[in-house]
Length: 385
Image (cartoon, rainbow, N blue to C red; front, side, top):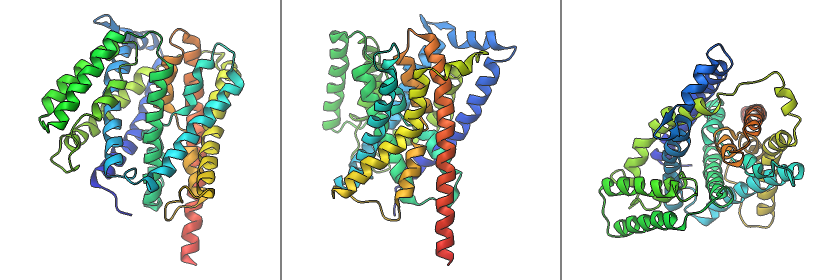
């Protein structure tokens, strides 16, 4: 199966980022529970221009992460795995199952409670961590599986972005939203006029971010919207979209996501942390990510194939899809991001959710790794025979 150079670069940077994220998370947890606890906590709450450092990271730097996700999604839609409806349908259906079933499981435990707004938490997939786990299996992993997992995770993140836009907006300023969309409209006109200078898009993107931030809709949405008005052209090396992707890969993978992890996993773990895991919120997150993700992905894919809507990619078996489902249960970055929005006025729930997310992601990652490793070994044995 042929894959583009840029897709390979995207996968390589994301899986390397997954390893860096693990290290950053461990460092952050150690510092947050050491003698440096107070100063480390103050570092992220230090005020710059009426906002904390943590706020600038979550609402500012993460917009650049979503811009990269948007650019990759745009590439997949135009010339990648999602460019043909036959190829796109399976990861789209898989992503739908991987979002709806976990959210449904979460709501079984939390409907009518103060934590029901957390239904979006187990819907998310962390691309970096998932590809990082996949990379541990080396070259034995079929290319079609890497493509399927990446497409699924990108679509999943788009779904999470839509959930953020529609369900985690408290107040809405139509004026600011209108200005943000107006700037997007101007950039779209620039696109159609084939203006291939990156500067107007960057300046316009900053303006979109500012007005989106003040509209009540989460500012990171502007990153995805900006991606779709940046000229794609033929997707060649000289297009703005491709150049921007090349430029953003390493800063996002090795600076933005690690800094996000450091800021948002500075969790002070109290002596009663295990009690929090018995809470319906924690149970919903755990079962949603560890059981709901693989269940939803496999069931929706099976139904799609059974009804003749699509077929499994060449070289993949149902066991591969199940293993992918478990790896999609690594929510981490995206799940924590949604947690901050869902429980912004409930700090105790934020802490409990973060612990549940980390435990769930580790369990899902280990199960997915062990299961896929066993499958790949069996395949090797069959080929040798």
